[in-house]
Length: 369
Length: 237
Ligand code: HEM
Ligand code: HEM
Ligand code: SF4
Image 1 (cartoon, protein in one colour):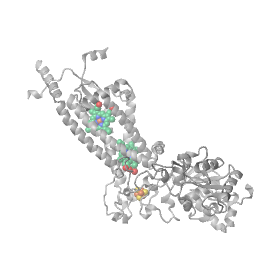
Image 2 (cartoon, helix red, strand yellow; image 1 turned 120 degrees about the horizontal axis):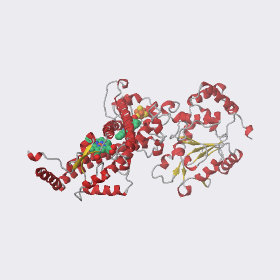
Image 3 (tube, protein in one colour; image 1 turned 90 degrees about the vertical axis):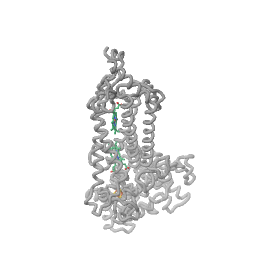
Image 4 (cartoon, each protein chain N blue to C red; image 1 turned 135 degrees about the horizontal axis):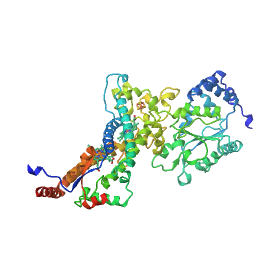
């Protein structure tokens, strides 16, 4: 059955894409993945020779923004092939099948391609109350995840939900939302964080898997190095303003018009590892900072709990929303100063006798000899 | 006039407590921490300096950060040196003075609290090096130094081309990412500021009450200590 599947290139052609478009696509992918020129022809050769691996795409606690981002990839080829209604083996939001038919399709893929299919997951998995907070076809997300992951060759965790839990895992995390990495062990997992991830990053990861048949180089948090090794801050075009100490003070000031650095508006660029500054969004049109808004750090762990989007640091726990570490620190500093002052006064009253006595003793001893 | 000139208390002996390396460590550390607090605070809350010029003509924020990183290196290696000295130095600077693992030390802490802080008792208690409470506080400060170095170099790993900070990058994911590490790093600054306030006050306090020259002991190394005759003999044996 496997052999009967058309190669990826054949699928491209069947869709009506020209050879030229195919080569353009391969070069683009090569560039995003940071391959050498020879790597590009490797991509092209692989796509010509190989058939698309079976793909199961699961949706749990999520908003589908990852899918939305993916289908807006600047080059439509990937989305067309991978996310195509017909060729994607199972995905709740985009497949034609529904109900029992859909369940059957999932089941067929799992049994026919055991150990071969790639599992893509969008959304987090609730773990509290036996996972009742997300059930599909009568089964909990947790059980579906265990069942489908069992025969998967590799797992791609799309977006912040699947890599760190995103908003539903924010304190107090009422449903016990957990990312894929917390509920599945012993399978290769590629984390592609972001809310959503950049379409080209998603495409790049998929093409790498298709073309090279192996997982791209990952960092310690299992993120593909080619896209997540540098901070937004390091590739931000406003960076010279940061180094020069030129900051936007309020959103409507003169500095904002001049395009100064958004650090003091709470920009999380210095703490966020992503490719927004390089690849940008919507066909490279712009990215948040270019549009005058500070980075909110959407691809970082717990970004919802990392404090107000428009504050540099998160608010200090237990002291109210407005309290920053500096306010609490200054308060403690003043309190300490007052305590030390009081202690100094008390010392002079309480230990006065001791001081005088000590002095007298020495005086006596001095005059003795 | 005569009243102001007193002979030395014959019970007091001069004891060489702080060896030169400890003294050098102390002042390098104090200076580095001061620089790190000033530049660190500015990194967290940069001044609103308005320039009419282009970004390419200015670099003041870059320089503040550079000073922070250089002072960070000085601070770190100075600290490592002190840890080393905790094994080879004299009895007062040995590591086991600092780690409160003996019952005697906990009793000592309580004594100091009663005499100096709550002033329930007039004292005195006897110590030659740091008193028990002080050494425990320094121990906790040293632990805070370790965390400050881990978060500092961990954050620095992302912005430095050097291999050295990369040795610390494993620590950042453990605390939950760069944001959390930065928050911890920032909070610890306040811990050091509060420590320094209380520390300097208490040093002056002891000098004032006990007239043991403790303030200058960190400069010259010698303290005036009331040495018990019996103990003296015991020490000689
Ligand atoms: C007593 C020691 C130190 C103090 C009080 C201190 C204080 C601070 C403060 C308050 C910040 C600003 C955090 C923020 O709000 O964003 C900061 C940032 C930073 N510190 Fe430290 N720090 C100390 C030691 C170190 C050390 C040893 C290093 C290692 C090189 C270091 C590296 C950094 C880095 C990389 C940043 C981020 C700078 C940036 O965003 O460009 N710090 N420090
Ligand atoms: C004017 C400022 C300061 C003075 C006069 C001063 C004085 C002293 C003195 C006299 C001691 C020995 C105390 C004893 O025998 O128990 C000491 C120890 C110590 N001080 Fe300070 N200090 C100052 C500032 C600082 C600052 C800013 C720091 C850093 C945060 C600091 C950190 C320490 C530490 C860690 C020790 C223990 C030293 C060791 O055992 O190696 N000091 N200081
Ligand atoms: S706008 Fe944000 S990412 Fe850009 S230089 Fe300023 S702080 Fe860094």
